[in-house]
Length: 180
Image (cartoon, rainbow, N blue to C red; front, side):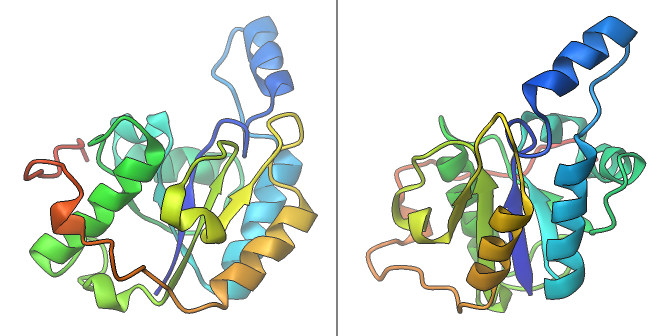
């Protein structure tokens, strides 16, 4: 399975989205060209979405519903746990949960079942995952050029460095507590 670890702010939401939402007194909506670029990635690669955004605290169901309302056609299969100080640590925790349980709830696949992944985020620091990072500019979000890069990276096999053992990343045992 191919996975997109997806942040919303600076990827799907641009500063103008928040200004418009405030003026209209409604929740922010994703920028349509960014959603189109995401749809291109999911339709051409078959990749599934794991939300890393703070929106994940609303649960996988609401995240999927919101994305669908904004026009996204991809499937949200999970959200990362809020287990660390950074999204990188949250993604590592997600991999660790897969390793601990031998599956994840949506697809019953183990860590070895993730054939490739990409991180789409506007933040720069993803450590060992940096080679799988599509870093967006918060002012333009996910563009077609960045979508092309994501598609290219999703064709690579996952390479998890030998030194990364998710059971030893310094976090206590964790359980998924995100509401559904």
